Amino acid sequence: MRYGSIINGRERNETHRDTLEVRSPYNQEKVAELALAKRSDLEDAVNNSFDTFHSTMKTMSAHRRADILRKTADLLEERVEDFARTIMKEAGKPIRFSRDEINRSIQVLRFASELAKNILGEVLPMDAAIGGENRMGLVKRKPLGVVGAITPFNFPLNLTLHKVAPAIAAGNTIVLKPAEKTPVSAYMLVKLFQEAGLPDGVLNLLMGTGEEVGEPLVTHEKVHKITFTGSLPVGRKIRESAGFKKVTLELGSNSPNIIFEDANIENAATSLVKGAFAFSGQVCISAQRIYVQKNIYDQFLENFVKQTKELKIGDPESEETDIGPMINEDEARRAKLWIDDAVEKGAKIETGGEQNGTVLSPTIMTNVDQNMKIIAEEVFAPIVSVIPFDSEEEVIKFSNDSIYGLQAGVFTKDIDRAMRVADQLEMGGVWVNEISTYRQDNHPYGGVKQSGIGKEGVKYAIEDMTEMKFIGIKLDS
Ligand code: NAP
Image (cartoon, rainbow, N blue to C red; front, side, top):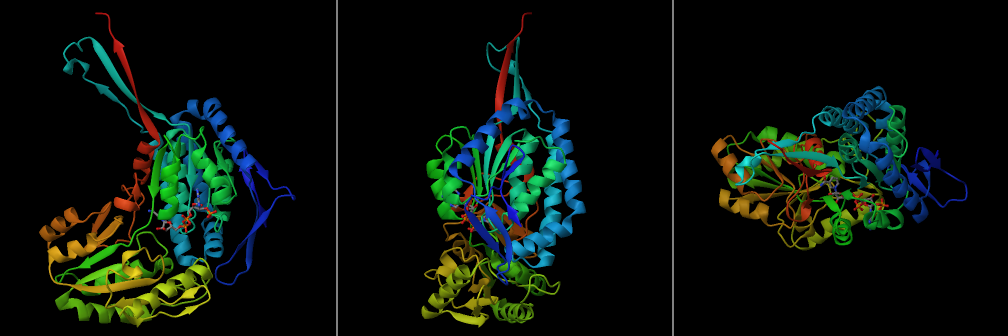
C-alpha cells in the first residue's frame, strides 16, 4: 500500500514522487511505501493550516471541537485491532503491547474531548491595585494558531495524539510530521479524524524526512509552536532553530528505580521486568538503572534474572511474545556495542547480551559504573543494570548523577522516606511503589535537565497550546 501526505483533505500520492519503504523490523516484509513530501509540500501544508486557522478553527465552538474528538475516540474504539496490527507491523511492537497503546490513545482523545469544554479564564480583582476601582479585568485563553508536531517511532499513535488531540481541543490547526519508520498509523489517524468530521486543513500530514520537512517546519514563520518528542540531539537542534516559537521538547532519559530493603521484593522484580524490557526497552522512561539496597541485593537480583529468563522472545504477531525486535538492525548493533564496551570496562552480563539481526535478548548487567555508556547515556534497548547502594543519601546522589531527569520509581513501605526521596530526585515525575515506566495520560509528564522542556498530559498540553489574553474594561460609574 502506498501512502502520501494529506494537505487540505487531499492526498499527495503522485507517481513521480521519490518513495521510501516501510519494512517490518521483525521479518523485513514490506509494510508500506511512502510518496515523500518535498519542501514545497511543507510550504503548502503550513500556508493551508494558517489559512484554516483563521477561516475555520478560530471560530469553531468548544462543543463542536469536543464532539469531533469524542467521535474520533468512538471510531478508534471500533478499530482497535486494525490500528494495533498496523503498529505491530510498522514498529515491530508485540501485539499485546500494541493493543495497550491503542486503548491509551482512546483515553487521550476522551480526555481532550472533555477538556475542550473546560478551557477556563479568570476574572481579576482589579481594585486590588490602588487606582483600580471601577475596572474589570478578564483573562481568556486563546489558541496559538499553527502547531507543528514532530513525533517518534516508539509510540507512533499515542504520542501523536498527545500533540494532536490537545491542539484540536484548544482550537489550533496542526501540521504533523510522523517518524518515517512508523508513519502508517499516523495516516490512519488523519483519515479517522476526517471521518469524524474534522474540517479539511485542520490536521495536515507530511510524509517526509526530518531533514526535508522537519527542519523547515521548525523554522517556518507561520508556525506558532513546535511540539517535539524524540531524541536529545534532534531536540537540541530544534531548540536552537525555533526562534521565538513556543517549544515543547519531550526527550530521553536513563530512568533510575530505587528499591529499599523494606520493599516487596517479588513485586518490585516482577514489575521491573516489564519496566526494563517492554518494547525492547525502546521507551523513554524505561527502567535503565536499578539501585538495590545492599542487604536485599542478592535476593532481588536472583529473582529478577529468573523472571527475565522466562520472557518469550519472538514474532510480534504472536499473543505469547514479550520481546520482539528493535526498530532496526543498526540500533540492535549499536546496543550490542554498548554492552561490549561495558564488559571491556569490567561489567558482567547476568543474562542476555545476544544479538541476532534486529533482536537483542533482554540483558541484565552488574558491576557497572558511571563511565559506561549503559549508565551515563540513554540505552533505549533491552538493557538494564542492577547496582547496590548503602544509604538513602548515596542513592539520591547516584540517581541524580545524570544529564537526564524524566521519571523515577521508588520502592519502599516507609512513606516518610518515600516522600523525602521523591522530593530530592531531580525528575519531572516520581512514582512510589511503581516503576518509572508507568505513565497515565492525564498527569503532567515531561522532564527536567536535558530530558526536555514543557509538559504533556492532556490538560497540561492544552495550557501550553493556548496563551493568555488580558482584556481590561474601565467602567463608567
Ligand atoms: P528521533 O530520531 O529524534 O526522531 C524523532 C522525530 O524527529 C522523527 O519524526 C524524525 O524524523 C524527526 N527529525 C529528525 N531530524 C530532525 C530535524 N533535524 N528537524 C526536525 N525533525 C527531525 O527519535 P526516535 O528515534 O524516533 O525516538 C526515540 C527517542 O525519542 C528516544 O530518545 C526517546 O527517549 C525519545 N522519546 C521521548 C519521549 C518523551 O515523552 N520524553 C517519548 C518517546 C520517545 P525522521 O523519522 O525522518 O528521522
